[in-house]
Image (cartoon, rainbow, N blue to C red; front, side, top):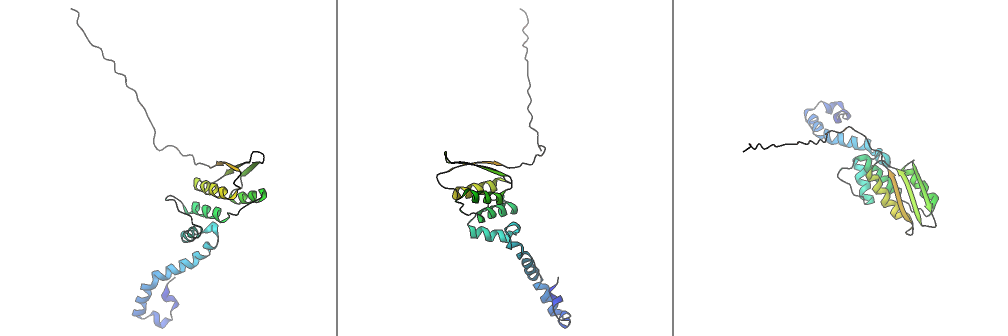
Length: 175
């Protein structure tokens, strides 16, 4: 999409306006891209890089050096959904938004809460632990068992060991 195509034909043919259009074209393309990406930034599951930066600033989240865009979206989503569930049912509803594969065991007599949940990565686990630590009452002990699927790949290097035995015989002539 060229900027000069939006101008009247009489201006498109002038050399000066052609050069102006060429100079303004990169900014025009960036503006068009920003407008097209704005719809993605309305939803937390489809945030762009810019949208993630804005939400992290709003929620006070820090970015780890190796985080992917998807990990950042998940951390933002967990923090955004952070409501204070004072009921067991609300806690179950919150955990169902984080993962479909989970179980919760509450032992009221021992003040113990065990959460087993399947997550996508370690950053999601850390964000969930921080959020649950704020959400559950202070008199409950939170125990978590997380299942994080790992990709099994063949080893790129092989570890080897070798052993060499040296037998040394000393010849002594008979006297």
